[in-house]
Amino acid sequence: MHEVNDNIGAHMSISGGVHKAIERGKSVRHQVVQIFTKNNMQWQAKEFASAELDAFQKAKDDSGIHSVIAHNSYLINLAALKEDTYEKSMLAFADEMKRCHQLKIKYLVFHPGSHGGAGEENGLNKIAESLNRLLDKHNKWEVHPTFETTAGQGKNLGYSFEHFNYLLDKIEQKERIAFCVDTCHIFAAGYDISTEEGYKKTFDAFDSSIGLDKIAVFHVNDSKKELGSRVDRHEHLGKGTIGVDAFRLLMKDERFKDVPKILETPKGDDLKEDIINTNLLRSF
Ligand SMILES: [Zn+2]
Ligand SMILES: [Zn+2]
Image 1 (tube, protein in one colour):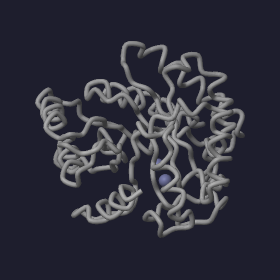
Image 2 (spheres, protein in one colour):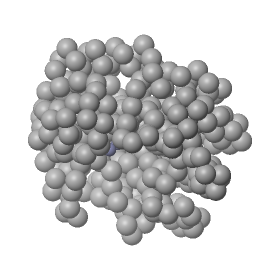
Image 3 (cartoon, protein in one colour):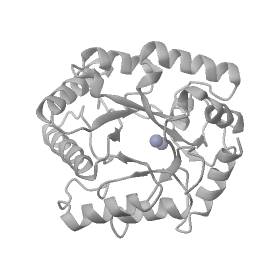
Image 4 (tube, protein in one colour):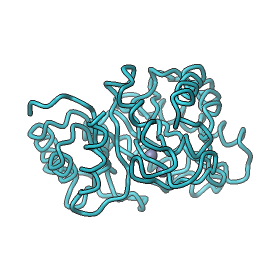
């Protein structure tokens, strides 16, 4: 591999084993990849066999892919009101951290959670308390829980940078927390990155609430829905309501040149759409 490191990648399926995601990323000449470490719609997963872990590291070493990001299960809600769902969420989150540790994945992206009607402040307090427990208990794992910015559908938290400012304030081991900025989500949440002026304002706001150095990952998606719609629907780059300028600004932004940029746009098994979106990003 003699290519320039542009940190572009995509979310890849682990169908056939976790190592398969690496092979999929390599097949479209990506340098980073995002995976689920297990079926994301189930609470439980079988432990990794050591052969699986070996196959994963070997595939990674052979691939030119230098970093792998994990995304946790959609079922997990660290602010769940139902005791049963909450306990399952805490166990599943810890298990995801362990799986990342075993795969040597540093960043575990997760959605902050839904307050379920308890109110935003109560929800945020519960998320902070949950992370304090998780980080305290699993001190040895070098895994950074990585908050993803959300569109704010329904009762989901994390659509405002202020939410994260509040969370960081309550989290004890702040240095272990990282962030994932999803371009579709922040736009749907009302941050207008479609123009140069709006892009600058958005990241200035992020910087003062959270800190740009906390950004470990970008999810690079256009949006099907309008600015401030609070609806999360991903679109191919340049084909949605954000438009191509935001992605050009992001790719050219020196502050983020070392930050992995992950596509989560719709695609088929042949990954043709990933290639088109990747080529567009590389053209900037
Ligand atoms: Zn995302
Ligand atoms: Zn999304």
